[in-house]
Amino acid sequence: MSKKPLILGIETSCDETAASLITENEQGMPIILSNVISSQIDVHKEFGGVVPELAARSHIEKIDWIVQKAINDSGKKIEEIDAIASTAGPGLIVCLSVGLSFGKALASSLNKPFIAVNHLEGHALSPKLDSTLNYPYLLLLISGGHSQFLNVQGLGKYKRLGTTIDDALGEAFDKTAKLLGIEFPGGPQIEVLAKKGNPNKFNLPKPIFNKGGCNLSFAGLKTAILKISKDIKTEQEKFDLAASFQKTVEEILYKKTKIAFKEFEKQSKPKEKVFVIAGGVAANKNIRSMLVNLCNKQNYKSVFPPIKLCGDNAAMIAIVGLEKFKLNQFNTLDYPAKPRWPLDENAAFLKGAGVQL
Ligand code: KG4
Ligand code: ZN
Image (cartoon, rainbow, N blue to C red; front, side, top):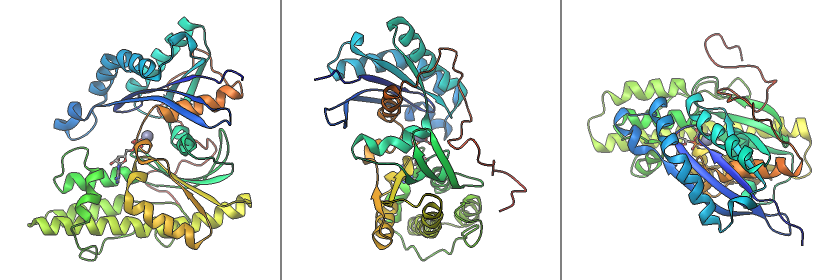
């Protein structure tokens, strides 16, 4: 029986300090030995959003014992670790620098390889932690900072099919929650409130619904919510607005996913049609079931990470580390933190005024 790689993943790109040890079984299926996540909700709550300097300070305070706890929980010894994988981007540079420097220092002191991981690739590969997944597959990545359809052709090989031209979907959930007076982080609360409301009460805009291929746009939706929320007087109206927002988002994703399916099939002619939905917003149960229904109708296999691995975590960083380790893809210790690091480096930048679709 050959020794299986033992990988330590470290994640500090935003407001979660996380560390995880993973390995794999004889069949090559990953095994999560530990997965420690410390959220900073209490640090940022009073400011209604993530404050970068405070986030970085909190990472510095915690990184040492979070990594120690991940090693202890795994039942392994630090000397048994074969490689250390840290998120190098995208994210807040002051936050990225903490996990990146820590990972490099540990790799150097243990004399083990260091692997720089793209946080978005972590989300993209997160379903591999509990499902077998072959390339190529279509990915919808919906998180707090990104909303994209990507053709995942292999490790490190991404073709972007569509992206948001303004806000990310998670951001739209968070801003809507804020306008409804829900405490930070409010995004996940929207689906809870939506259950009590009438989804047809407010007619909200669906920007670029009928143009722009599978590109997405959520800024107009947020502006509409801002206007309506000023006139909201009762709790029931609040529930109705949450429900109308949730429904509108589902309609946008339904239509844009159908377009992405066609573009993916044209580009890759896949033998098996697989659709992966990952990132924090993939935890939204209504979005999950709506997309499962669409996949059933269109002969796609739908794959989600387990709900607890949708949000930021270090197991998803470790799985990228594991795949890279097996291909001997290591990085030197001068690898920089990259605040902006698109998965498809060749895709045009599509944000801001004057974007032509
Ligand atoms: O992937 P993630 O943890 O961090 C980023 O890389 O951005 O995603 C966080 C985002 C937040 O905007 C949060 O509001 C959203 O995911 N989110 C949800 C739900 N759970 C988390 N949005 C809608 N419904 C949810 N249940
Ligand atoms: Zn993330």
